[in-house]
Image (cartoon, rainbow over all chains, first blue to last red; front, top):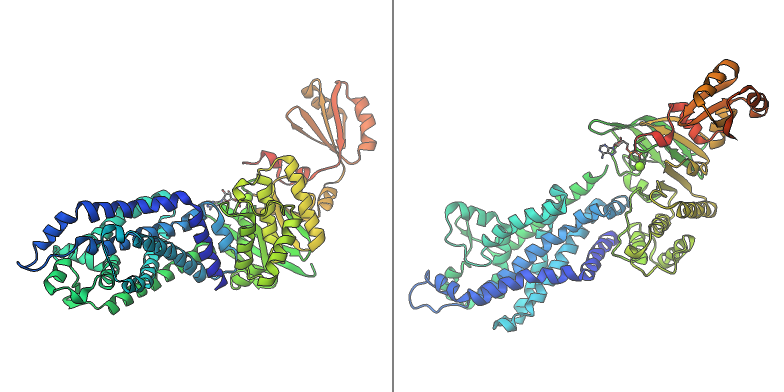
Length: 275
Length: 311
Ligand SMILES: Nc1ncnc2c1ncn2[C@@H]1O[C@H](COP(=O)(O)OP(=O)(O)O)[C@@H](O)[C@H]1O
Ligand SMILES: [Mg+2]
């Protein structure tokens, strides 16, 4: 326990000390908020409203896209924070960790929790932009979504740890992640609905863990109960897998399971890193 | 060997093409300073990393403090401290933070942490800079901090892999003072590697390693005595002529040449030198008589000097 805490705390301390990274990590989500929230919201609304039957009330695209952009921030921050494993190897510190009696599973959990915490903090900071975007979410909904953001952060950091154990160089890691992150965002429903995709793309959407993360965040943050079915449909908030409508419970369970499996992978890779 | 704290049997490590360590055997006694001396690439780091659970042996067995390195990794890890050949500090953190993390990794009791940190910082004279980030430290300070960190959890054995490599001579000799001070104070077993001959001299026993083999283990004095006799080094106005004369007229000396220096190994220089000087017609430009060093031991075993080995 102490070991997990020590590793977690070290990564957080380093995150807050690295001003350049701190500022840099906000530029992307803010840019996306500007583009999708401001510039493109009009045309997105028209496009998406095209799917809706005549006469139904339109919806606010910014309200739709904001949780998606928070999820995107979680994805990018989690994965990039997991790169600390590679940096620790390059700078030698990983040896200090590996030669100590901390159990390998504690190392994996500590690293995962560290990256997830950093990602959640980044996500929460975006909440402060809500008033400036002309949005209003229920405060309770925002409070409820935070634990889920942390869980999603764990799953996505686990993915980052997996990449880190396979790739092993920071440049390679950055390149791979940049190539992978974009499709993971575009094919998750974060920025536009993914309900009417061609069959092969639909498969990608359904195996993409970000899809379920985004879906849960939207379901918690957007007041789905009071939105008419056709609008929900147009927003893509009626995710089905193999013809079954997925429940939020199932989605949360899936993401927790995903995180657990990845922690085992990471543990295994720390075990293999030395003897 | 009454009470070995480390015992290594038939330890072998083969990388893809290289046989880095070839079935070596040795024991380290509790409380001694055990030195590994050998040129770069001899297999010293590979051996140390296997003993410290950081590298999986190809074959062979290792026990430390009664624990099997293969089966009881965590117990072994808790029993040892190691200063790796390369820097393993977190330079973005302060000295204090580095030490505190180490205490937590090794489960040093909470109420003892401050006291122990203070204690080890005092040993290596870093109390004043303990709140500074490590990136502001000089090479020697970083090394001292690593040594301090290795001591925090009171290990049974402290491993030091080339602790002075890359440091200037003055810092090197200071660092050894710290290490010896520590040894006196704590009485822990130390296992060190070096490719500097003078540094190996402080060991109670030295294992000389070359190309993955241990070619001799003994106290530095015994190793040198085993060689016996004295070493005479001389330069003359014409070494070729001198060698011819030595070949013809001088007996009882082993002759070798290195650069412009002729080396003679003799039973006793007192009996040898006066007649030798009279015998030689070529004028001598430089003459030096000395006892054998560990380098001569290495030379005798391998036919090479340590410095000549591949870097
Ligand atoms: N990871 C590795 N992969 C392949 N060969 C290695 C590796 N590490 C060391 N070697 C080789 O093993 C031999 C011993 O190296 P090392 O133990 O570092 O020697 P020393 O510490 O005595 O200088 C060298 O020939 C070196 O090139
Ligand atoms: Mg070495």
